[in-house]
Image (cartoon, rainbow, N blue to C red; front, side, top):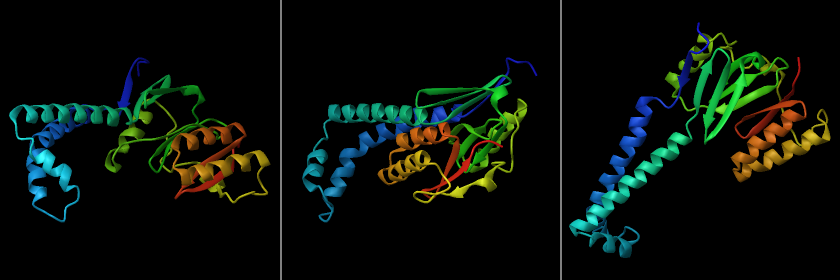
Length: 231
């Protein structure tokens, strides 16, 4: 296979049409009908926010409706752009893997990859010491996940249909686990708090810190499971 060929998963033409076409159209339609919807809701005396609804219901001038349609179109476009930005784009070549999400690009050289697999909704790349090079949530529907495996196989990557080759080595973390160094327990304790605070960025950063300390952590139902890296 020529080295300049590439396979891309994510950001398909259908996705772009739906997000950049469908959402603005929906927003514009909502803007057009908003005064009518508000007028209907004012007849339901139990419905909250009657004051603002009566104000919106009075916006029946043609130029006001044009403004509302324009606002809906722009809002729909920006929502589409945000959704597209949050969608993982996977580009696989014979030489490397490129992951693009939230304007952040991660590139992993082919020679570093010893295993590739899906762990639930996450794509994982491992190195030869079983440490994780990448763990990123993908956005494919369940029926479309086969495209991810097919992309990696097409370029000769070691795709694992059975998931993590070291899955049986994971153990559930308990606070101050005696089998872990104090530094690792401290990071996992901080990650546990980040779960309850719903801080996704902190979870990612702390996962990387665990990796630097020679361990791998995976999450399931807001519980942490760990194993040592290395064969």
